[in-house]
Image 1 (cartoon, rainbow, N blue to C red):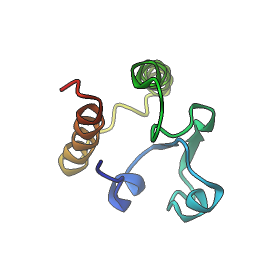
Image 2 (spheres, rainbow, N blue to C red):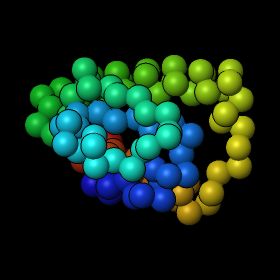
Image 3 (cartoon, one colour):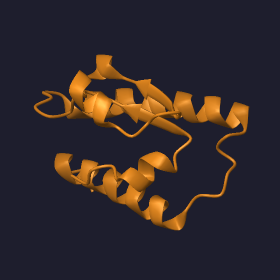
Image 4 (cartoon, one colour):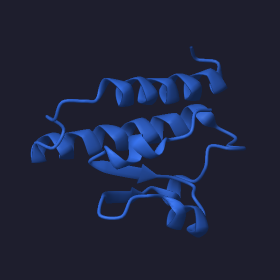
Length: 100
């Protein structure tokens, strides 16, 4: 799995974390950024029902995108390097459950 890079975090309008310990949250370079914790979803590591977890995440992402579009934050031009890194994270997630 590809980890989020500092550049990805620092060039983001919103950072969503999930399944991080309090210590890991402190280490995230999100000072001054809009950070959302989806801790109730927990970590995917060792998750028994990955398809269900992915459905929950997909629903949350859809809601977040809708909210961002309403605020017109998502209309910014995307850094191509960051877009490639995000796509790699998505591909790595799907490769872990055999859906690619």
